[in-house]
Amino acid sequence: MAVTFNFITSTAQDINPYLLKGMEAMDNNDSAKALEFFKKGASEGDKYCYGRLAALYLYGIGVDVDLQECRKWAMRGYELGNSYSTMILGFSFLIEGGMNNMEALERGIPFFIYAYNADDRKFESDGGFSDICGMVAGYFTATGNNAEAEKWIERGIKEYPEHYPNYGAASMLYYSWENYSKALEYATIAEEGGDLRGTLIKGLCLINGEGIPIDEELGFKKIRKSAIAEVDAQAPYFLGLCYFYGQGTDTNKTEAKKWFEKAAQLGSEAAISILQEEY
Image (cartoon, rainbow, N blue to C red):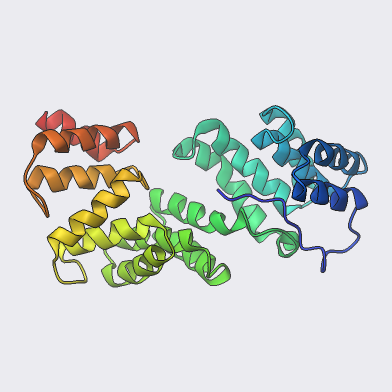
């Protein structure tokens, strides 16, 4: 979740001077001054300052974390159609409920969709917006709307081609849809860009011979790397399966249990199920 405070000033119209001063203060790591300037801009009804002020309260920058205050200012920006304010409103639910909490994501999704489609997104930073498509696609996949999910993930890749987490998210979605050629295509790009979800998908394809010749040893190494980094709740689960069935490594059910427990702690229902059945 790479939300930033950048602002494309060259194309925006009627820029509030307090917004620019607040941005300059943020660039100088002076959060107290930024808070002061964003508050002044917000007092004048500037929708961009609403969003920046809300973000300070959301992340506790120069002020204590305060979700109520965050939402107060973000809602004002949202009511004026500001994409950044609306995005911050969506993230407030994830900060409150947890990034992997489906209920929190469900509350945030309408705001993320609105923010991404808002007219003034072209004036804003791409720091947080670049992550929205992957989250929306994941939500639609979880709710069974794969067509909508594919539309969103492809949109994110097209509009933010250098944002590698979108490729990682795409590789996982296409793998879940059993489109292994597409999964491998995006997994390769993600891995080259340092997103370990791509490494996980490459490992799964290698160990199972899905869209690529089987190489269990290399597949195991990639899965293990992603599991250690906890790139996804399922990564430790898949590593547990490797140890459980002896794929790419020696069979070791004690080691498998350790990784199943790690996956269960991260919310993997599959890991919880195998622990109940086998241990």
